[in-house]
Amino acid sequence: MPVQKAIQETGYRRVSSRRSVLVQILQFGLAMAVVLYLIFRGDIAWEPLRASLGEWQYILPAFLILAATPLGQFWRWQSLLRSGGLFLPNREVFSYLMVAKFFNMAFPSYVSGDILRGFYVFRRTAAEGEGDTGTAGGKWKAGPPRVVASIVFDRVAGLLPLFVLSLIGLLGALWHPLPARLILAVGMVAGTGVAVTLLSFLLAYRLPQPPAVLLRLSRRMH
Image (cartoon, rainbow, N blue to C red; front, side, top):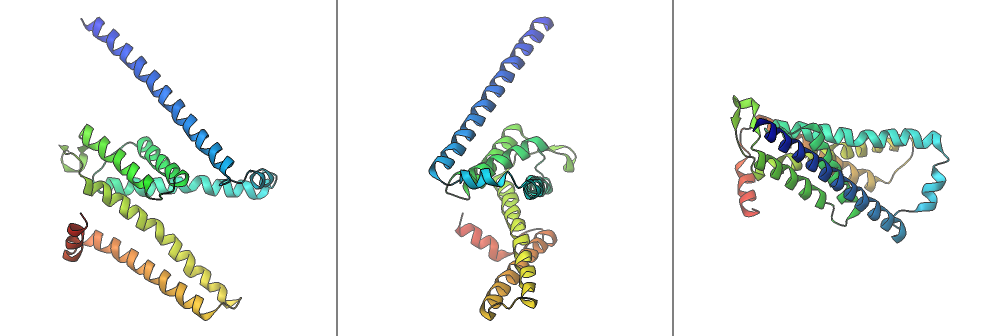
């Protein structure tokens, strides 16, 4: 019986491995089909892309920065997930993030990727019943609030560098005159964005529960 059981488990692993490889091939084929469709439709300009490959002194640093960006996003989202008690392997979280980024770029809705990665994480943690190692190994099943909170704060944290860069860009007015209305508008929007973002993280860190006004608002938008 143990030998028969071992043979069955080996056969199951082989079938599962083949199925995984087939799924990956289908996913890669779908991704290539979408990219070719975008090139054919004109959303991706092929000629400038081909011409830019000759400027390797600019392409290489840009490619390295572009390749490092998803790693930073992965670290940020994984930190938020773990702070909320969602402990998933790094490989899975990075996979969910890259699938979400692909959907955000390839399809019209920019939130489609967020919905997809939230669905993946919720399904994974709810089905497996991941143990929360921070609570003496207790078992729990993740609810939507934990998953949604990680994505919302990930989005908020992603906006912070944009606001900071906008404020840094205003320093260009010291050397190149800029319209006063532009400086005022950008300064107010970027400054408010930085203040609201930092205040949101401070409240989330200090308060055990959200403010009552946010709870009432969330109930209305449930």
